[in-house]
Length: 89
Image 1 (cartoon, one colour):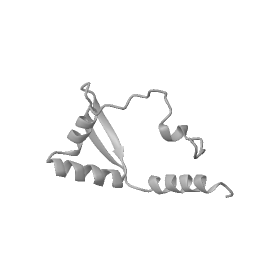
Image 2 (image 1 turned 60 degrees about the vertical axis):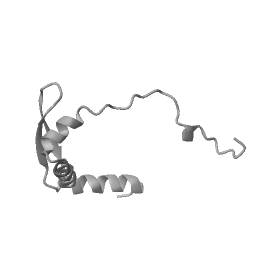
Image 3 (image 1 turned 180 degrees about the vertical axis):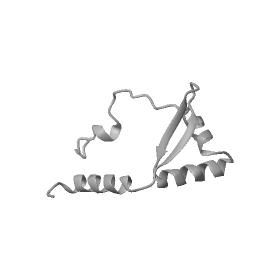
């Protein structure tokens, strides 16, 4: 298959992920809705580590995470994206 390297990597990762066992974590969203989040083994391990460190379970961590505010998009460019490469600026 002749594709750009980034597309080959993407496709390889899709196949790799599809071969992994998926773990489903049930939790209650902030509006009271029961949710089920599918996680890869890697994600599940990390979530369990966070839960253990905080002395709770993975479902409770996801419930609490639902309250983390999402940064608002202002539509402005970041300072690094405004850099035109001119060292005089």
